[in-house]
Length: 62
Ligand code: SF4
Image 1 (cartoon, rainbow, N blue to C red):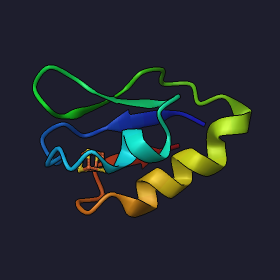
Image 2 (image 1 turned 135 degrees about the vertical axis):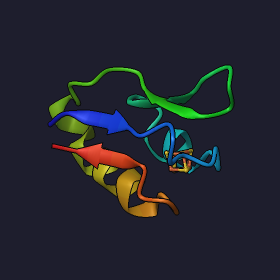
Image 3 (image 1 turned 60 degrees about the vertical axis):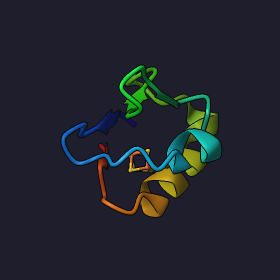
Image 4 (image 1 turned 90 degrees about the vertical axis):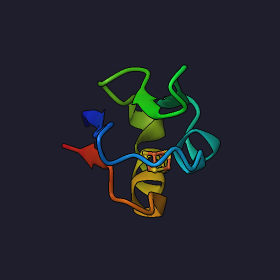
């Protein structure tokens, strides 16, 4: 699974790093980034939960 954050769409709510800190982090702009694009297998469920929790659907998982 590959994780990507659409920074144009992120509103910086902070939900994704609080749900899945192994994959998502807030950067210096106060917007989320994917720390690693390749999501470790044991983090896939949390990454999906983070994507579902994103209020602007800024997280793309492939
Ligand atoms: S949950 Fe969505 S809007 Fe909130 S910080 Fe993460 S990517 Fe941005």
